[in-house]
Image (cartoon, rainbow, N blue to C red):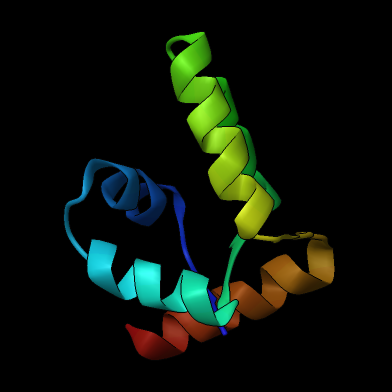
Length: 82
């Protein structure tokens, strides 16, 4: 499973960056995002067309909850990767 952040999903919609890799992950059902990225994407929609496109994308990309334990684990992983 791959967890995509807001920037990766924005780039996917624009056909930039890792768009091809994201498309492959979508086809395999192997991509997730977080509720924070979901919030950022939906709140950043500039018009009804953008909002509809985001809702379609997020329908295919399940959101993972981010509670205290998950945030702590994520920060440990990030520090270990840096």
